Length: 130
Image (cartoon, rainbow, N blue to C red; front, side, top):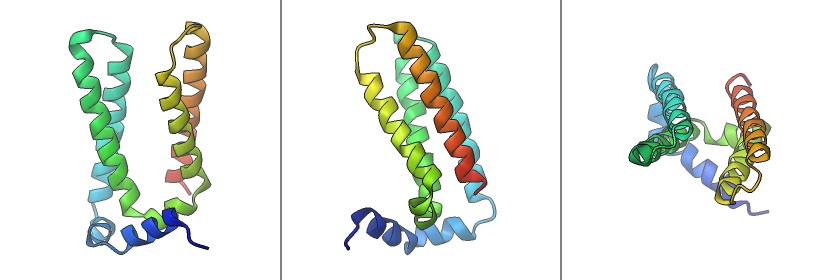
């Protein structure tokens, strides 16, 4: 059966960038550290709702997506099969969709957001230690 996501993961697995990342002693840990800093940057910018600082939110999100893509690229086939990775991606999609909806019930939206982000954090730890 043809699975385009698995084919993409296998193609990424065979690239020179993946080989460079996996053979480097420091590349993945440094990218991971930048990813964590970008999480803090993006999270902090979301908490501060100042119009002047909104562009910093997008910078943080861009760094977050870029470093996340590099981390995925470092071991795409393993992550393709990881239930933790799939859960994290599904939760991020739900968070993204929820962010597009108007918040009529701010407390409920905040509670849901916290639960979803906690799920992302737990899934991320599952990816790292599995």
